[in-house]
Length: 225
Image (cartoon, rainbow, N blue to C red):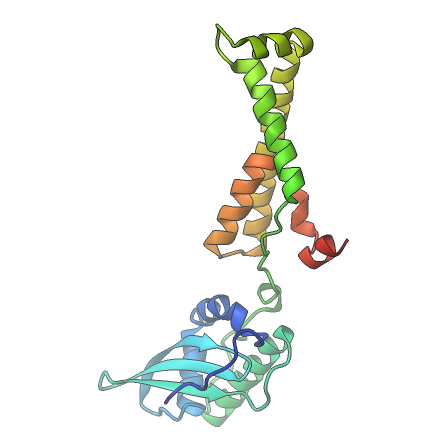
């Protein structure tokens, strides 16, 4: 059965489809129940979810003879918010179990604690902050660690700032950025972030310039200030 096209840019559920599909497929019995009752695939022996959006979800059901059928199961009402997904899927599972006379002993499709918006969009530092921190690190590192014989300009700057002071700044910044990076890793892992590029951007930028506190600042709020 062909899937109905949906405008992904305006769909409130589609951006979370990959994570939802991955979680739902850890409950194969529930997915199979959906396929048999709502998808009308009575001979299905297994099924898995392949997509979900505000209108419904797509299942790939395998029948006893090995044939596979793709079915699109529509929600009774188009979902208007992300928070509606869990109660709707739970209610659908209950309806299917009762109609098929199946025991309701399995867990609900999604525990509420696992069904929050855990995606943490990359919140970059402002370009001026980025350049200032990188310039400071490079400047201090050159003064502290440039090997002898050093150019005259570096000798002149060392006569003004010395070498121990710039070295202390470098060590402080490197140490603080390492700590911030560990905080970023811990927070993203705790939130259940599963987007690889998000991990790369957060960790890479934090190693270079810090800014782990941006994890708790909404992007739209920060850039509107």
